[in-house]
Image (cartoon, rainbow, N blue to C red):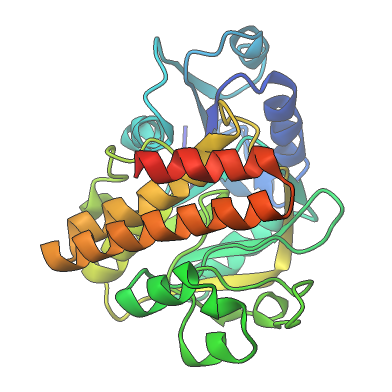
Length: 317
């Protein structure tokens, strides 16, 4: 049996139908082949799929066992980063695709991205254009956290016209925002991409030892991208608009506060690990202020549920 060129790693947690739909969309990518014993067309890319199930309580495991994939069954949910690291340890591909279970591959997006990455040796990581269910553009990645862009984000200065052209934003705006930014309408370099679709050279990933398992979910791809870049300063990360996927989003979140709280904690953990203590403490107070102010704003707008989520977030930062 020949070794795969590409290893696709997917984390499953109580998303039986969504995960199966994701796998079906992968198998429809005509540039890939999943039978490593028999490859008739040299243009097809030998591919393996590794699914790590984080102790799902639905029928995910029984359904996944019927599909030709490598399945790891965990006895507990250790989080997104830890599960991905399990997959990375057994992945044999020269390239790794980290793919969320709540995604659908469009128009052979995987083989398109792989062909592009193979022909651009100066690039370590690339991603596809990520779309919402209605095909509108979804934000995907941005620039590494620093004091300037975190202050801009926390004070909502990045919502003002032209500010993001002066300060590289932590979270760039999509075209439907009132400033009509064109950031996600063209191929470009950026610092990090979302873990929903993250294609990486394995030779650049291995020295990092994978994800920091102190992150449970949300923000870990920022920190991983930072270490990949640190190890390969001359190499680049690219956002591509040719390949496209749909990302449903939030399918594995336990409750409504998780995406909000973990975004804040992800930024805070990044500063704790990679910045000095003074910056860490300053950002912690800044994030608490931001969460509290958003709670007040949503309360004044009459959205008591969201106001409560931000108030809880403020108390947990």
